[in-house]
Length: 312
Image (cartoon, rainbow, N blue to C red; front, side, top):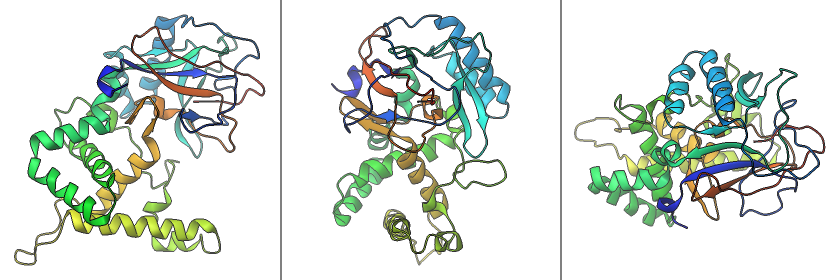
């Protein structure tokens, strides 16, 4: 199925563990979030209007960039479970959870947790990024493909154009995706309790990983990002001008794509506005799956509710 044919991305509670790589799964350890019953659930989305309002109000209440993001999302008519809310989670930034209101309905097996129409995710997809680059800056797109060929990494061109697309859209006040992109975290951690990505750490922070298998992997990733940035944006010694895109911004965009985008068999390579607020937890006890559907009423997945852990 091609990306053009897909109408919606659907996240459903599932009863089985995620055991393959063909379906993108999410899990989390937030209390009460997406707890599922042990019985079989139906395909009824139930309470779509109520669910959307609860979720959208909770996003607006967070303030800052989330208020305009709530309005942006409302205009694109997602479908949310009636108990779904956005909340700040210590050490994890903003995440999705089941409302603490005791009257909030539980997420049953098979319930749709969140459904995103194509208008929500396609503007921040790899397909849109590559198409925009080839249309607006064909010479640069060809340059990126040449760099990927020199590195012997065919998919580098897609990853790089995707990352740069986010930067260009974020810097464009007229971009239809800007309200969402403005909510993306810095990935540097800090006082706001946002998550951090080791590829963006300082040398001193990376040094704390010495003695672990992660240390070499982080150094390799950071070195590769720096090398590809230098190849994509070579400095002209004649005019002394720096690169059009700084290494810091390129590294952030690359880390954002690698840490937040998802893809799999039958699902597009894309960021998922709002769905990317579903936090991961330790282990492989995922009890939600991501799927695609041609029609808004279609989806797949069945839920399990063994321990009440949150899922995304």
